[in-house]
Length: 392
Image (cartoon, rainbow, N blue to C red; front, side, top):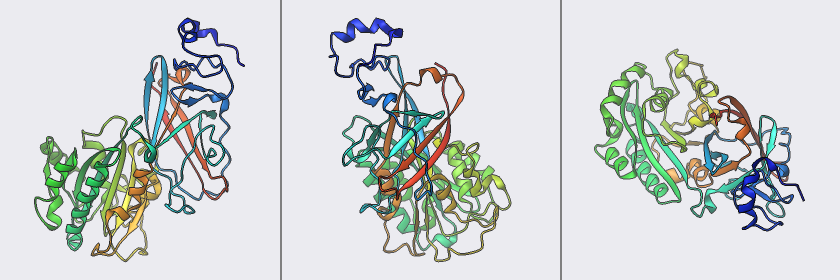
């Protein structure tokens, strides 16, 4: 048995009236821990139970970018990480089942988190098992190449976007949808909205015209800003990506951001490094909270010579942010967005929560490291990113 921490002793009279000496106190005060192995606050294991992140030898999976939110329960601060699913090539459904601190038996711990090098006790919630206690907010933006070469698949893509959006909206995710159409210019956009407004937008016309035109409450300001992202006659998905990131106003606080880029062309920045796929490979420019990017590439040619800043593999955006990729035919036949691995990634999303962070609420940047290691060692991955903590 541990001694009570007396720094916040004024809680004790209330707590002892409702808690036994062999269980975690219900107040959520992590400073009073009565027994090894108890939960410290809001179902989160104590840091005393946390093991250091294991060492990774050969990464075999990619950990997606992570959205983070600070939550408060009474006087206790909690850091919440929202993360889409992690691919497991060895499982039947292709996704890893993540288990946090204290997992044992058939469900042994396979994900670890450290904060400034110190291991944290973590609680992990799987969206597929979510019973409403922790709702995952997700903002999805479709980046759609609407140049002439996309005319063959444009109608099928729009149809599938709507069907897929309806499927996601009926799941236990809280999802909103936006869209950017691009060719050599940004020719259309719809800020984040519900699935009904997205359907109306995409069904106004046919072919590549479906994603042309600016609609929604801020249509005028979006159209005005779009001229800054012209690349002449060259399609550039990164220009569309940055436009949404910098000018969409309806992103929700705490929502995971997911982008799905549809194209049949290389990413073509016309020499501008700010629109290169490498832009998202730099945390100073595209931090972990800005979102993951998933690629649907509808062309048979995937082996052309890559030229940085001129003709780049668009799926690099997925590789750099932990997104997924789907390669299809130019007709987009025999494929639906349910085949897109991002569907599984969203359905197998996770929330990771840990506490004991009050002493770090200093307005400074702190390092978070997430490590994944399956019991048999075949699935290994690690991501290090940086979070600015608000001042307490």
